[in-house]
Length: 97
Image (cartoon, rainbow, N blue to C red; front, side, top):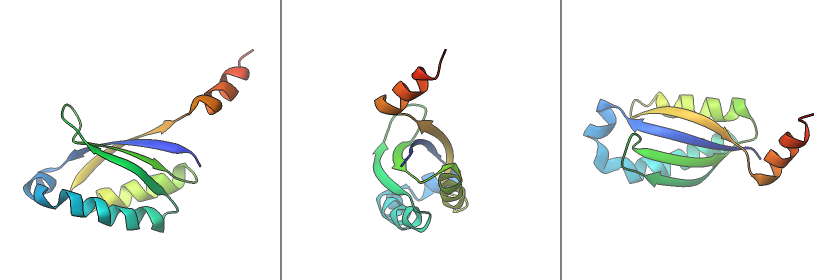
C-alpha cells in the first residue's frame, strides 16, 4: 500500500482541547480503518508542525477522504505528502531515460 506523511497543526479549537490529543489519536484509528487506511505512527513534535503522522492507504482518494473527514472535526489542519520507499524510488528512477 502507498505510504503517506501527514503534517498536522492544531486549530484554535484543537489547542483548547489539547488534553484530549491522545484520545483523539485513538479515535483516528477507527477513521483510518473506515477508509481502508492504517496509521503506522503518530509523533507529537515541536517546530512548525504539531504532529507528524505516517500512514498507509490504498490510494490517494482514500487518504484524501480520511484527512478531509479528520479535518472536518475542527481540531486539525493537514498537509499530506505521498512518500516513496527505496524500492519504489528505484523503479521511478529506472523510468528516466
